[in-house]
Length: 459
Image (cartoon, rainbow, N blue to C red; front, side, top):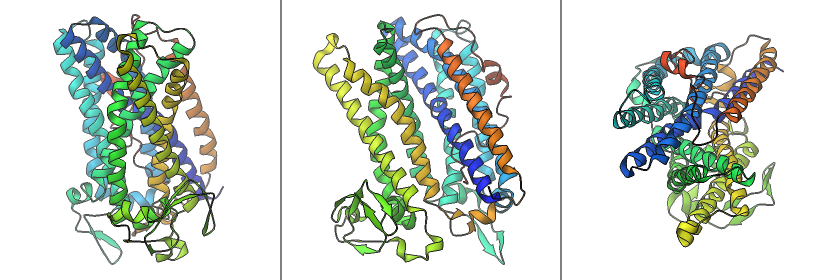
């Protein structure tokens, strides 16, 4: 592999695995807060037992996410030194603030884990509030750095040099809000469906009990709240992208030519400048982007071919993300419609359990493909309009060796995490001291966590 391809492949591999871990690290603290809070409010001890059974999972994902994020922080400097030289002084502040949020999360995770039998129930529940807030804020700070790469702001370029840096304007750029909302909600969607999916698998295998059914219900409550909000935020994000990043929007929709009354293309496969097997809805894209069926939408032909994003990867990723989102919305509606109709007699049937298990996977698929859209759609730029990806990468050879090495490392980490989760006691059982708790107390597994979240992809 040539050096550029090797750097992109290694960064992409690292972010792919990192994105498998971080949504749970963001979403599970919210579930701890909700379950323990309901238990305190209602006096139903089952909810507190449920929260206690989830503590090891939170500790494990925190440690693994911190580890993979630390690798990413080193890769930013090793694989993309020219990018960091160009942008480090601009996006350094959100990364630094993410470090504060990371350590806050680590401190309160340690308090939560080790304070279960040492704090009063109310004080213990209160410790979950800064825990879930700092987890979300940590992600938002790094998302703002990624948003800056998509929509740069807060600096000037004079004679090729970056000057007049305004770090606040850079951090709160035009893309940060919709990316932060969409990215954070994706973690809650993924977590809710993943939790429900695990309990659904237990039920399919005949290993379910009342506590497991309660866990499925709590997971589906989060999923049912988050998935419609996520779809609404997706519409908002698409409109912002259409206005501020028109080439990315054109690649998402595989719109080759600038035109009024542009159609939406659902599915299909881009083949050169044509789309095969797509379903077209006339003028719908113009309405989606500009609330006007006859509005003009910018196409890929507005720039030379060398400045266009890769259409096939961007469009197909976008379709998979949107399709997964609407499938999860349907499954959540199916679950709660049956729960409402049958009330206390509700017991998910085999087909619904299978759908819930599928939705547990679709959450991760939607998150991964969503980041594919973000990153593929920005190419060929690492900082859109200012620095090309090829110009930001290292020129040192030998990265392909590290690609193989890190592939083995990530596979081993994932296998170890899966083994640890499988060996943990079933819902309602006593929770032993979780691996990762020591890291949570010291913060040692992730250092400052400068790239702990999955949102700083320069691949």
